[in-house]
Length: 382
Image 1 (cartoon, one colour):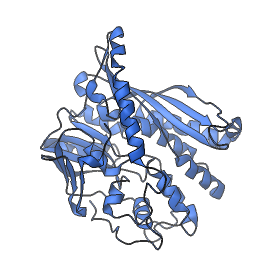
Image 2: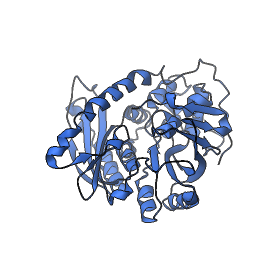
Image 3: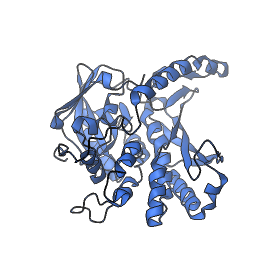
Image 4: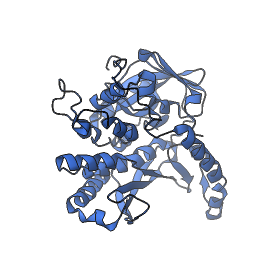
């Protein structure tokens, strides 16, 4: 574990918040909630087929349907603006990063799907370009295909197919909008993890992130405009000489499916799981139960996230409420299984830490080493 990061030093420019970068969750989240309510009214359509939704999956990271002998889970996710960083770095260095971008896109979907206890089965691709000309770059296209296939193999999923529309006038010329959908199976049904068993005494095990992953890129891109050499600015010359801001941002998102599959094989029950993406560590408050989450130890902060927090003038609450700060995935497991959970994750090549515990009490997240508390009102996703 690391000591609390020093986020107090402010840059010369005024602080830069996620809202100033153009992302305002108070405008986005109400639409999500309205859509969830409208969608819930369609659940009765499943009865004509003899199926039923798992109502508790509404508002979770993946939707679950009971189809009889097992459950099916599904999710669709968009990558967002990380492609813009890859495009900028290609212009600056001549290197395509679209193999990593492919992994980012699949991770957005798969890392959400596995939170409900599902084994990923099939991934579908959606690659919408601003015009047919985007596909002329053979190196970039080959990197995208190569990276997509490799990420599927890492997660043990089949690549079923996809769509490659040319959307001139909708997508900006020279750009591409990437998304992935994923379908998985929850079998046996007892593997479903929607938080019914989540409660006091559970341990919070955090899995390491590789960096910014694919959330917070609007802020990161805005920050690049402030830097003396933009994306080519070195972020940690003493500890990581030669590591530029752009290269660090493009580290591919960690795929956590191997860990959740290994935990199942080891017989370790997962009471709940959270993919730490938008809203940062506030995602630990995702389940609607009134419980307190107490974090007593922090994972190391990747250099790029420490750099962003410092250069953007974030205090600890802003940084941990926006970015993953070194923890890309959270597992809530019985306290007696915490150490074994760490061992299983590390056997999959992913660092993990016992970070805290679940307690009875008001819905709050206490990050004790930072003196930061988030209450339930700070995360409104239902």
